[in-house]
Image 1 (cartoon, one colour):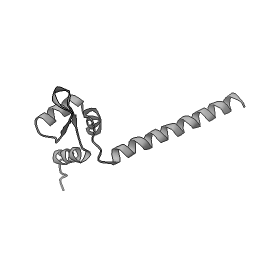
Image 2 (cartoon, rainbow, N blue to C red):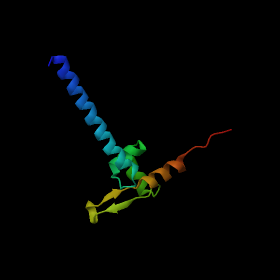
Image 3 (tube, rainbow, N blue to C red):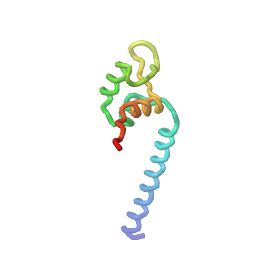
Image 4 (tube, rainbow, N blue to C red):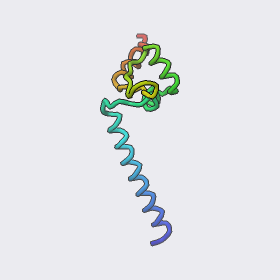
Length: 93
């Protein structure tokens, strides 16, 4: 095998692995699985601290996972989409 053939084979394997990872990530987003604050912030394209503030102001629905000070915020995709719908600016005809 030439060096070019080896590089081509490695590149194909890498592309295949990227596609597999992308499918796994897409499946997780497609379901209404709970998201962490970091995942939800990425979904909304905002900083996790901004999401935290909005949630604490009851502008975005959330739940808590765990007890006491170590509990973490959990978000559902539908709640995040509801927030986006409320923030939507209608088009003018």
